[in-house]
Length: 342
Ligand code: F6P
Image (cartoon, rainbow, N blue to C red; front, top):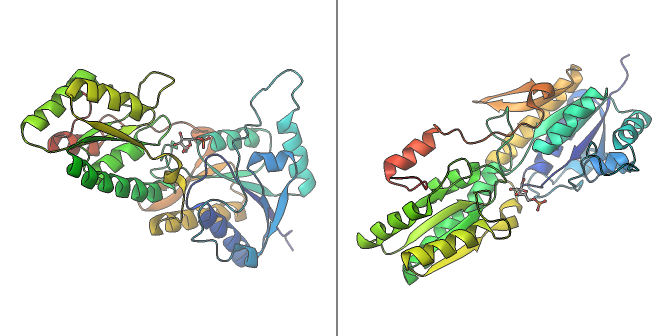
């Protein structure tokens, strides 16, 4: 008789729609397909440090597929970050609590920081499996993270709404999209929402060029313009991207300009159907890896296939928008301004 496996699950980093769908995918597969014992770890890696565990059974996993956020809570705790000479040895504590709890494996659901921590814990001898999540879609190794599609629905709806008010007032509207240091959500939102100017961190922009483009639009009779900017573009430290760009445009073009910073609305609410499917598939696949004791991997999406890559290779690397991405070429062909010389 092989020993019944006991797995821990944690959600870490910025929350996003689909986390509970992933928890459900892991938990229900582990219980139903493999009769594993499943334990929730609260508040990301903090829960491992403070031994805050929540037994998860079928009843506690039902009704959460469509629920936004995470029933376990999350944190941005970085156990390997040195916080001072007298700081406690958090990785050591985590290892002790992992052994005490009798975990066979822990599933770490999170973005780049989480996968980096998971890779380091694997090096400390823990059995870990990573599942990539974030609205930023910037986890190297996977073509998509869950959270991205749900956020895209929110941002695209917001941009659609800006068109009507911009047209009524004949204004230039600037909307700031999340994405940390990358432009995936901004590029996809800008193209889906019909943005006239799309600015992402991966591409240098020139304000003179943007302003000239907008003046030409006005001269050609376009009644308004929509500017979609990533929060991570190059700008002065103390000011938001939207504020900086809106002020420079109003100054340089002379047309009334207003800004919208979407912020945390992009991370809220129920997951999209595609995110529910992706999160569930990631979760189920993670449990198959555990059943085969194929530890130290992160689940990935490659085309239509769900597969895995070693955490050693992934380890929290950032996935930037490649400069030859097809959407960038389509944007240029449509006459969208990406901030460079037209
Ligand atoms: O990683 C998701 C994200 O929403 C980023 O797009 C954003 O820059 C960051 O989290 C905000 O971090 P926090 O939730 O800690 O304010």
